[in-house]
Length: 413
Image (cartoon, rainbow, N blue to C red; front, side):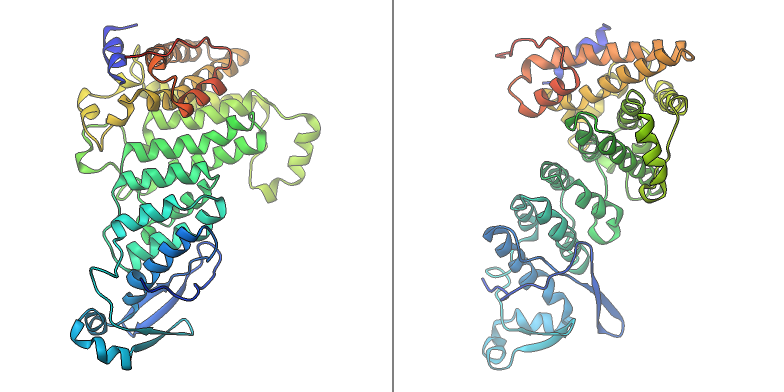
């Protein structure tokens, strides 16, 4: 283990609406309040906990709906001198076929803070349904219709984590694919890292069920394509430091694709299963590969990472020291439990790919490179594990991917 690797390893240390309109996830209709201005009509689903329903009602009533008024009308409802007049004769407009009345409201007392309200609303979303029905309209309503400044990337990272915990990563992907409306742009390394973790998690938690693994792989490929196609929006913030790679070519993220592809190659289809998939191939929109074709894809993905990964280095030493001092850089990886659940899938990807290509027998040099990279990352993991034993997430990932590994004793320091 190099001195540089050792050095980094040691550092890892109100008024409410009576009811809310219901619409399926992602559906919006368009209202033109003036000939020159069109806004999407936002729908929230009235299900979920009482706390979620209340905060969504408040955001809808006091943040989103006033945006359908003219500028002059909006000013009027916030001016106390019109309070009595508006009680007698409220401003009334029709939004998507439903009449809405606007009376006086206090800008400070009544209008909720979107900066606090969005993360609070997300924290009340507990089920997949909560996320799939309400996340997209919440973000679109606040950040596109009401034009509030988008949340800090840390909030979006939290959304990815909580949605993943609820089994609703698909709702997050919808927001990312339609980021022009939701402003859910991938702007920090930590956001992308959390997303790729969630996209892989279902595969190993299912015991590498082929359908779950293929689904994760399709999503990973789609996100990588998006990161490459829209680098103007999905890119590191200016204060992220010299991260060294664009997101779509970052070996840390490319390892997620290698991981699931290698997992599939190690679990070839049975003949009967292969026949059944072929019969339904068009509906599933997936390619049916032979074992040799799968091995060649593993080799292709592994070769791309080997070209980018500095020889003899672990994960942390792939970057300049400077990025580990910046919150929007990669400082997050120095928290040992985070390093463990990030690095364990990478080491697993290298080991799985090594198994596939050893069996294939055509890529001896590539196998040696993967073996060395896996060793370097595993050395870092061994340094980080003692102070990660109390982290449920870190240990569940490590045990799932390395069930036979001997765990070190917890560190008290």
